[in-house]
Image (cartoon, rainbow over all chains, first blue to last red; front, side):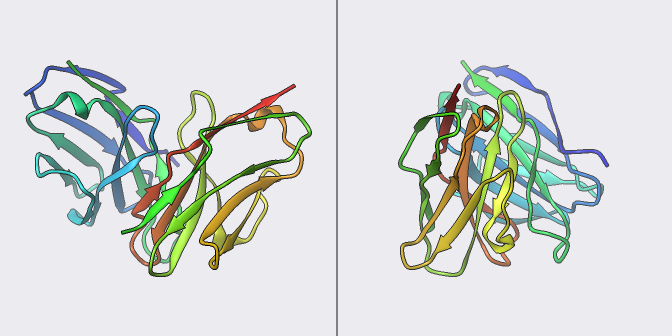
Length: 114
Length: 110
């Protein structure tokens, strides 16, 4: 059973650019959630995808968008990057309903916006 | 709106001493509470959840709905318990959308 994997591990972008982060969910999991973790803070929920559709969104602007693919992998896209977008971005996958409530996290992508 | 507060940023204890990490939450519905842990250079992982009522690695946590708290306790801390601990809340049946506290760093000294 493979765990949640994220790519890339580190990324440096310039203010105003666009970025795409990728996540492969754990085998058998059909729900993927994305979190932003700024330095010294706890993770903040960005949005969740279930069966390729957005299933809930946190307090993030529309320039944060996502996708989920038929194999349940997911992408997080951020447009018009701002300096404050610098953070660790975490992906978490969860099993189908009725098979547990635990969220399994990836190792994260560290994004630096300069 | 739901909110999770961990008042201590850092807890430093000696090996063998008790350790208690505080967590308070605000939520009007029926929450599910979790403790997640992140050891050095490892990913965030679930430590325990309130519905399981289990002890993991000697840690226990009791949900107190009256005080809206979910404090994490261990009677005898070990050096390997040094890590970052996050309390988190999710709405029941809301698909694991977690609200995290700011985290508490635990340092267990020899």
